[in-house]
Structure formats: structure tokens, C-alpha cells
Length: 402
Image (cartoon, rainbow, N blue to C red):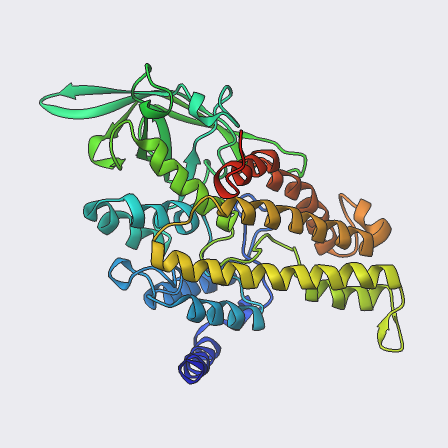
């Protein structure tokens, strides 16, 4: 296996160097709602990058080729990630289409749905948001009340949706939503249906929510007699909870990190980059960081990142055989979210008083780091809180008694 992987790496490295615009090296992935406005030239280079990567299936590297993916093995996908990191290139595309609904459609979608949605997700034409949580249904998601009533007009069946969702990430930028709706009021879990919904449909109102970080990634979404197609039911009517559990496992395994895994949040460095920053800011003695306590913390972070990465790779190999992640993904979501927050806290320790900057400052990255640290407080809440994950691990992984 070593030689083919080496050949794949050499070919990929040559192609990336010759094809991807050099202007994108070191530029983080632009998150929707960022205050920074990129130049027209950079926007054009990003569009070219997406087109080139999508043409080879590398925006969704492990998806089957017949749906626009790259058909890569987990090992080859890891090589791709390493080569992008070497060039300090972000993934060409990120989002819930690649990390959540796309993989879920591969498991639960019918052939028509796969043919319609997956190739358009790969190119970025379809951008999805998640319509799950409601004001009265957060951790107890199955208590959701947004209704979808089957209606018939001119011999055509359709669903009419009324209700609201909250904490809908990126709803103001999405053109599609995957949504859980109540189709049987008499049954809690077995009365929920999973639908795909065009966000341009009349009757949808989106209201962004301003967050502590200053951004407005989360939204409220209101539905007033919104029409959805029966053909866009994923799985079976009233069996959407089964589909939702699969999707939540994909969400927890990736934590919104896109098709390649890893932390793609703007401005958040890996442990190795933190080490380099520590050497710059704290200084060295005899080739080692002068602060022994900080050195121990960074060494622990590097070891944990390496162990976590290896565990994710093993899980990806198992998942390729089984077709879908299981409840063990709660362990990954719990560990990754708390590991990321540890990384952020170390970063702020290194930055010292610069971590207090909110406006102005000498380096725009200082402000990005501070806002990213605040935004990361949500990672142990969304996708299921850390407490919820521990309950799932106890019940469904460790099989502990009630």
C-alpha cells in the first residue's frame, strides 16, 4: 500500500502546485458573515479553486464517483488533507451539505435524491442549513412541534409546513434546508418526518441572531404555509427520527468541519502552529520553550491531537465498511469540542493582554482569534451538549444500566 500512496501523493502534490492559485495559500476559508471583504481577484481565484477541486471530486473526496465524489480511500483522503495543510490551503468547500446531509443521503436517500442533490452539493450550487432545534425542543429534540400537513391540490400531494426553528446556522446564506417536521401529533419519536426544503419557497422568514462574538451565524426561521414536495421526504414518513440520528452522528463525527475533517474555523491554529507561536512570543532556552509549564501543556495538546487524528482515521475505515457512523461518534464530538476549547485557551494564554483586544489593534488576526475563542464556546452545546453526549456514550456505547 505504501508505494501506491506515495505515487498518489506525488501526483496530487504536482497537480495542486500547478493548478491552485497561489493567492489562496495561507488564506483561511471565508466563513459566511465575516467582516472582511475579499477582493474581486481573490473571489475569482476561490471560484476557480472550487471548480478545479469539484471537477476531480476532491470537494467530497470519499464520496462515490457516480455522485460527483472522488472515490478516494480514507488513506488517500488523509493524504489530500496533509497536502492541503502543507500548502496552508483551506478545503475548497465546507458546509453542512458536505459534512451532514450529503453523507446522510448516501445512507438513507433514494437514487433520485442522490442524483439530484449530491452533485450539486459537490460543486457548491446547493448550500444547506439545518432545521432541527425549536424554542421548545432543544436537547429534547423529539418534542418538536413544527407541523407538516399532507395536502392535495389538483391531484398533487404536498406538505404544508407551519412553525419555527431556532439556532439555524447559516440560514441567511443557505438555499436549501434539511428539516424535521411533525407529521403525526400522536407519536413523539415515530411522528417525525425528515424533509428537504427549498429556502426560496414563499412563506419562509429568516431572522439572524447576534452572538457574543459579534457575528450572526445563528438564525430564527419562521414557516407560514410553506409548501414542500412529497418527493423530498428522506426515508419513510413518520420515520424521520431514524434518519436524524444518522445525520446527528455525522454532525458529531465532523463537528461542522467539512469533507476533510480537521478544524477549519477561521484563525484557529493547530497544536504545531501554537508551538511555533509560543517560541516566538515566550522564547526558548537550550532549544526548548523557556516556560516549562507551558511546554508541558503544549506537549499534551500535541499528543492528544495526534491520538485523536489516528482514532478518527481508524473510525473512517470502519465506517467505509458499515456505511454509517454509530453512537460512538458522540465520543468524537465530545472530545473534539473540548480539545478545541483547550487549544483556544492556550492560544489566549500565549497572546496575553492582546487577547483583550476587540477593535483596532496592530494585527487583524488578533481580533479574529478573540472572536473565534468566543464563538468556540458554542461547540460544547450545538450538535448536542457535552452532557447529552456523555449520556449517549453511557447508554448506547458502554451499555451501562439506567
